[in-house]
Image 1: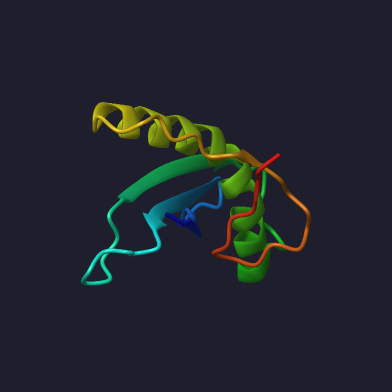
Image 2: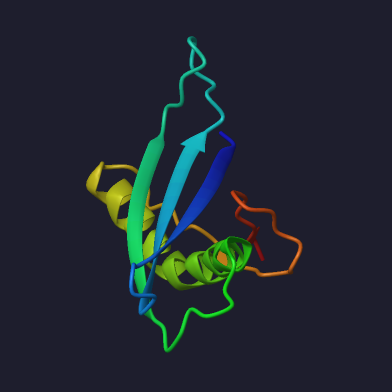
Length: 117
């Protein structure tokens, strides 16, 4: 079984420019080795991260997206790891531990790189 992880981080600035919300959406599936190509394992979670801003002046949408992609991944990753491990245990499966996050600067939005060492 090969596991696939995806992350989508969506930033949303409040109207007053005082807080930035990041919806971090995580998805874990296996390679779909079943007869119909559907995954045997599917775990999904959404985390809402809220950051207080002193000012949003000068921040462009691409700045907010870059912040969401990096900080959303980094800040939500420990909760994602715990969620996956807890849910697999509750399902009666062997505990699945998502590897530690490794930030290399080469990540593309939507990808998640985990250090397997």
